[in-house]
Image: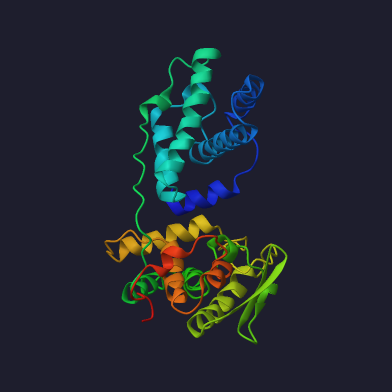
Length: 304
């Protein structure tokens, strides 16, 4: 199964017949009774374990007993988290730590397992914090050209241009509804903390959005109705992780050496806007508290 197909299946799996579910429940009760961790921490641990259980069901449907769990299953989950879900090493390490703890519980406390296979999977080295970087215009054009080679590439290009020309957060873009659009006036309206915001649609974004709307009409025909602007090939809401996967693949296929991600499109917009507006205004536009770093450059790298 291709990684993109695995991501789709992972997001739409039925909520039954999981092999770890009962053990996760017992482990959850143990953690709460010990009162060594905060409720928030326990909730996150249990959520991570359920996500691993979901992965096992999708990837290894014939796996029926926890005793059959091997190193290779957990190691492939590592690859899925990094290459499919685009998680950072630090985030994966938290998930692996939760899996190790659960399987330790099943080995040492419940004596269900003879050994803990997760101990053979190594933690990943945390990435060094790097300065925020923009994507040069010529590289952006290369990425868009590669995305356009896909049958549904206009959808990913449009999402990318929303990042590039509005500075909206990726999840804000994925949550957009059809009624947020005002194509006649080339604007988009949305609510943040019950406050109304209006963003103008720049000409390149408007052009791609119009093209995407034609595709969306095809994708939504004879499918379950959804009011989300961006929808999948099956007519359901489009998942941000699948978009990130498509973006990363475009980088790889284009032989671009820098490890750009969609967030660098937003950085490019922010650097540009930093030359045109004050910090308080930029904070509102980007919906983030810290923007000082966008003002550190002597020359704006984008649209200069």
